Length: 225
Figure 1 (cartoon, one colour):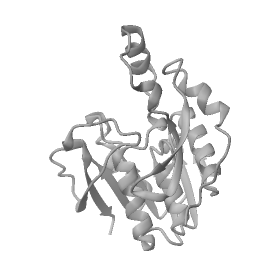
Figure 2 (cartoon, helix red, strand yellow):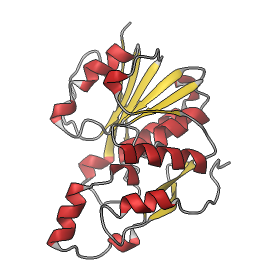
Figure 3 (cartoon, helix red, strand yellow):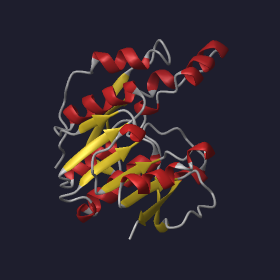
């Protein structure tokens, strides 16, 4: 059973995505590994053409991470939907929420409260529209470092793409007693007390034809206990 419905394309997200490319647009797309969830994501058709140098610079200046469901996000959402006991009845933060896919999965799996946290205001707009699309509700927050509510679990997908972000792993455990991370970027993940709990093949939606190494998503968990 899918929780999503057919809605008019949100004008606010089309306006945002045109900061990346003037002819880019948003479309509703189902997630192959999480058929319960559909998201407003960048339509791949206008992207299938050569880009000018100016367009490449524009994409680099506004990469619109929120307009893709990254492989790690799809894997973490699926893992939560397949194992609802991970979040059921808990207060959960989805850090680096992007499209909000993992926050949506947590609500569907029975979380008591979910906070989608992202520093990008356009990502928070994406979270709002994708929550509507999937007929769920969660809270929004823009800055992990200013967040001071009590939570039971922090979940994060594909936020370690930059080595400068690795100290976040320690911050996560300061914010929550349990942490669940999905990542495909860090080759030698050795950050106790984080432990590997599985690896799943996946892909970004729409598919960016990424290198195989970025399609192997690893799941890690950590606890203060």
